[in-house]
View 1 (cartoon, rainbow, N blue to C red):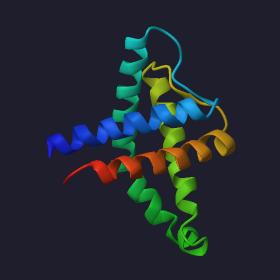
View 2 (view 1 turned 90 degrees about the horizontal axis):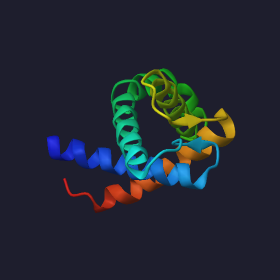
View 3 (view 1 turned 90 degrees about the vertical axis):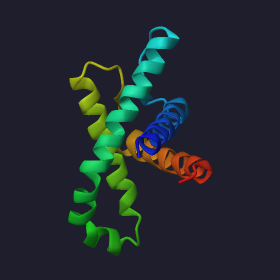
Length: 125
């Protein structure tokens, strides 16, 4: 169980790093390489906790919209989770920021979803 959580955190960290690399509006701030890696890992932990506790509730509330859009509204829910992670990272004084909701958060959530999905295929249960 703990190994699965650690592996999922690493997958989230890689997915967040790829999204920050691909989209200029998602940043991890400056500093040394060690500081950036530490920030990526902490933000991945926050992202995992947000997805574990808040995402199911939000998906349940938005279920009619998810059904109406044939599942495409899930990307908006994922973008909201990324924005919430950015806000929480600011509260913990971490240098992770998402600039704009639509362009940066939605496309970032799309990249994070696909990278996480690809890396999860490698993960053994």
